[in-house]
Amino acid sequence: MSLFAWNEAYSVGNVTIDAQHKMLFQYADKLHAAMSAGNGKDTLNQTLSDLIAYTKKHFAAEENLMQTHHYPEYPQHKAEHDALTEKVVRFQNDYLAGRVALTGELLRFLKDWLSHHIGEIDKKVGKHLQLQAH
Image (tube, rainbow, N blue to C red; front, side, top):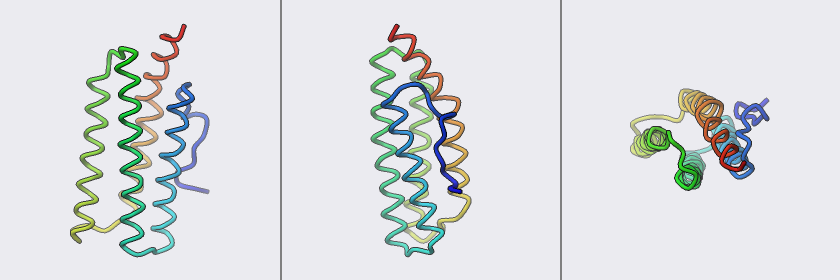
């Protein structure tokens, strides 16, 4: 079983956001598979880069939706996005500089973050968007 398996419990009730979240899980799973296969630094870095790039794209789309629909907790939500982005980019830079290795610790962090952020924080956004639609 995949460490990053999507299930409907993560659904926030918005088709666009849910589709993007599924892609985040797929990118994280691809990183896990590359690490498990013992792929080299270039492949791992490219996979991590793809995950980071898609995460930034998703955050921008989600933040745009929150602003468009006047989500009241937008500043706190954006701050959480910014903190994750900064942490993962810093990790990638440290990895490329040879200061850290890609380990299970990164995967656990990503899994915990995805589960918590999507399962709790993004669900509030989904509820707000649903209320705005009615």
